[in-house]
Length: 426
Image (cartoon, rainbow, N blue to C red; front, side):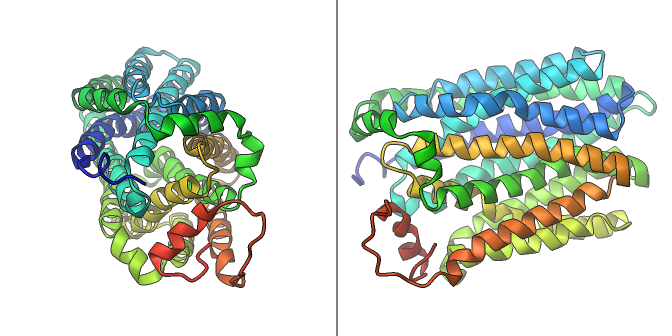
């Protein structure tokens, strides 16, 4: 890969992290506020799960077409469009007068978040040399963690601002989140300009190939499916935690401000993990690190089901946040490097489709479980999902190193193990 056009680009990554921080802060502030407002409008735990699932429903159908678009070099326009949809969804959720209306605008918010993330991830993949992808995706996802750190605390403080007026204060939180989303536009212009200038390079050649790579061919490429499933499990855990910790807090008498602080503590631990991700990969290797982090997250997630005091929940959530910090950036690199040539953005979009599928199915399942067995049950379900993802991640450790000159496609799959110290890697 040519180093010269890519190397000077550390500034683009910083601007992207800043923009992502604002966009994610808006979503992370809006989602607990949506849960609190839905509860104030008469929704029960099951309805909160359905609303959380609707957030992912529209993106479920849009991810692959948007990924195809970015494989043809049109990443940057997705960023301002995504910001506009996030801000619109947040603002109109604040005025919705029923759980059904909130569910609809929550779906618009989710579509905006998807558009932004597909465009941003594709920019990182295109502008990072293979040896820098783990680090750059790790730094890129720090933007998400910063947003998840600030957003829930802000939501908790605003919602707790006036006793007995949760419907009104949650609407204020949603309006503020719309304004926060709009702030991300300030970091986007130079990113868009740079992408247009770079438009016709080697990627344009690869774009022709992308037309010929079917979704089935991408999904059956070794490494893509496991990366998608691990990402789905990790994001489902983060998502249900964000949506259901307010419900757990209400039942256990924990104030919204404390719930917001607990969610932000988890995000702070995730930032710490992502800052340390490169030395951890060198120490353990990518495969062992992914498997160990999923196993630790499974145990800690199940622990939330126990009737713990707030301080113990804080300790548990800090450990959980650290473990959950590994799966997203490493699954991005895994999917990009495993994908067929010219289909990296589509593969990333399929990964996001898997994420959104998890965001539809997991909250809906969690809502049913919460209705049947109480609000602790969804966290036990998540523990099982993460345990399964740990088993999927560890499988390559048991696979004998094959000298295989088989037709099994990609030498790209083997780049990453060589970097991280495993002989056969995946």
